[in-house]
Length: 446
Image 1: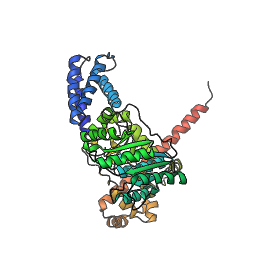
Image 2 (image 1 turned 180 degrees about the vertical axis):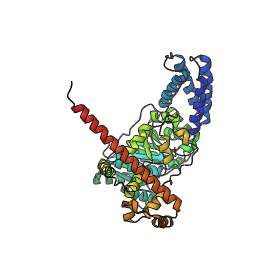
Image 3 (image 1 turned 180 degrees about the horizontal axis):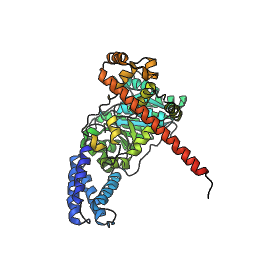
Image 4 (image 1 turned 45 degrees about the horizontal axis):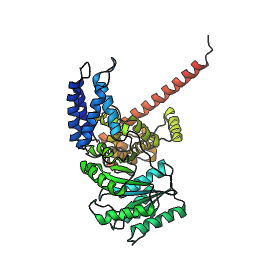
């Protein structure tokens, strides 16, 4: 995501490296390269020109402080303008209705039905809502069944009327069902359509007029680049939607859609899809995205994802086991599952400042833990809780049982031993620091 743009911008800023001050000449040269980088990323031409004109105006009006280099100042200005270009502030959803009604719209194949399921999961688990999904795609035969399966997967009920042909009536019935059963959010999945399909475009307008939704979210595939922006404009002209969900931002996308949509349709990007898992839907933060585009990482989002998987009681239990040197393969396996729930591994590593560029060419497979899990699951309960009993014959059995080899088994056990020692060292050091702090605080003043 944005890797090519990040590299191009980094090269652009090098033009100012070693310069003593910002001048019209070196700024013009830098921004000429920045504009090319934006256009190569499939950013709308008018948006790219307006962006660089604004940056130039601000850069020439700045006095470079002695402690700040021209290159650093330019990065700061570009960062702030990138964030502003994508909306400036994070925009939340309007969920004040009883129930709050969210109407999902989008092209065929944009991932709208899947996003409906992901959004329901997010609202249920992270916002404490009680959502209901409504299958109002009466056009595609498998759509209702797909939503039914997704609902079961995320633990959210689905209102389905098998054999129904009138999506407006289904939507109205879903509202009555949501009110009667106490659901506080209703997510209406509609048929995917083409902007040129007048019949289907009129159909979704009829649904909108009938249900008066609190939110109309347009789901668009970021992989389609500038076409996504053009489609977003056409849909907005017909629906006047309230926000955008960009899907497939984890793919091989140049990022132009994310940088252009806000300026072209003047509607905020509210969520971004970052993977295939049902957890892979994140609120869109313009400033954090600007950080990532400029290679600064996104440590805040990384910490937030970690906190979502953090269980305070489990952490205390684990700390006691580490202190007693009882950390075992059961605990090790649990830690792996928590990391996997945080999302795409390469995406997570890319959030660490300065690391994204280093791993861009590495093939970090989401199945990186597959062999480790297989080896641990091949262990007996005794072997998991007492790793010291893993002698040569047991290790050979694990290799056969897990479909790996003895070298991989030995490597895992060695890594586990190192992890256990490191954890013990960290907790001991932490305890010593706490004691030292308490002693220092309790010492009488002289």
